[in-house]
Image 1 (cartoon, rainbow, N blue to C red):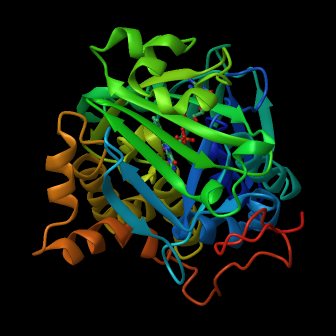
Image 2: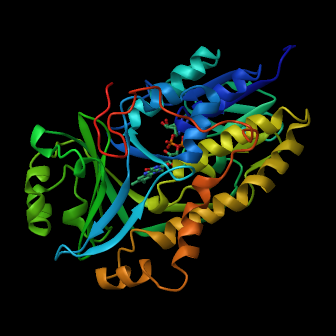
Image 3: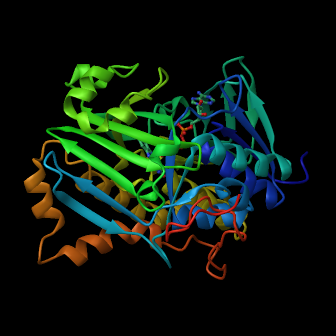
Length: 400
Ligand SMILES: Cc1cc2nc3c(=O)[nH]c(=O)nc-3n(C[C@H](O)[C@H](O)[C@H](O)COP(=O)(O)OP(=O)(O)OC[C@H]3O[C@@H](n4cnc5c(N)ncnc54)[C@H](O)[C@@H]3O)c2cc1C
């Protein structure tokens, strides 16, 4: 007999590890199964909005995750003639955006989970769950638990073992993501910390600063545009579309990763003692940069709600009823907002700058980042330790 509640979690990504940290901090014994040989994120950057920062702060991972990264002041996009399409200012209190390498974020959450006592098992592939409270792994072992969590990503095997998918939509577009090294000549104090996007036909180049060493490039294109979607990136193809970005394109390495965007809707976010979280439950296109933010918000909310009631199936139903409407709002607005691949630039410009409704649209887009995570209502905003950010929103270099 265990003397404390026990969780078995499939998936050592952002969601599984955040949940592991939060549960272990609340006295649970926790085991995470990661199918890969090590816990590692691929080489790309990630935007983390205020809601995600709040989660990191609550579990004690914010300082480690965000030290040295960039707080972006704004985002701008231009058409092929250099005309502005859209511009969004970020800032306090609820719409700060931090940009950092994925690996830095993942390692900070992993370290937090380990410090809290979570057990992390790599090379362990989860294949199914049973609603009564069992996780089955590929080696044939059954792991009994009070709570079983499927946080094994968009193609979740554990979720599919329970036949929970209602709809999966493969979008017409996808993206290649990679990290690119900075060189000294990039570094204009004010310009280099802006998030920028250039449009040409249905191709886009999104530049996101991460820190002094690297920036993150996200190349977006329709899936049918095979030459643009090829990995390693075919530099001559992208040069043809964006000749003015030659100095950046020349530095692209071999290691980019391509993903087609997928939006997932489930019949239910779990069954019995099994909860489905993160991309497994609500993958979305990256229009708002909120897939990870939404996932870790829901993980922390679940850990907090489990503190209030011992009956796990009841808590899971309440948790879904509480969190799902905002997750679906985020999926919807991610799809509406960006990248508008089939839209010509003039049309997108008109949409983004509608004289009527623009502030309503902006509020819909901000809603996920303004969300106060369940159980953190009394927590103050995270503020970087003195000198911890690479660059301040006002363009002054920080001291790391
Ligand atoms: C182009 C693009 C840009 C994005 N940009 C942003 C952004 O800027 N900000 C943001 O918030 N979100 C962004 N996202 C979304 C974000 O990447 C995801 O929402 C996030 O990674 C989900 O985390 P997760 O832990 O649920 O899933 P994953 O990150 O997929 O992690 C799942 C983990 O489970 C493991 N696993 C898989 N199957 C098994 C198994 N059977 N057994 C055991 N382990 C298993 C995997 O190896 C992996 O470690 C973006 C997505 C895309 C496609």
